[in-house]
Image (cartoon, rainbow, N blue to C red; front, side, top):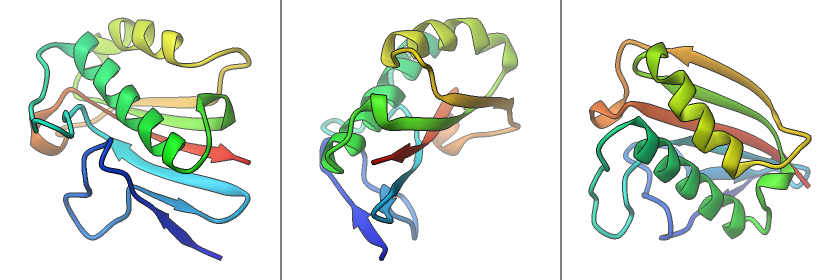
Length: 124
């Protein structure tokens, strides 16, 4: 079983992919960038961008009937590893212990020139 999850509370997909896919046991959330779904605006700075990306991620989880407590793995893509500490502050506020497993990597570029993108895998 494979079901697409979609919500207007997070930015729509900007390509041929789903905001998330629910397999029944797992929900795979596509990378979320810090776009406000109502205005299309991108906040300034890594802290605000990380917070917005996490808010978008939470909205998709909620559309799937889940919370951040269901998340078992995340991947954080950063435009610059120097942003790690400030991103981590926002991340720590978004998740409860036990925290999900996580990878964080610096990449050359991200969509729309943002500073951060966050994807997640959640379990029911």
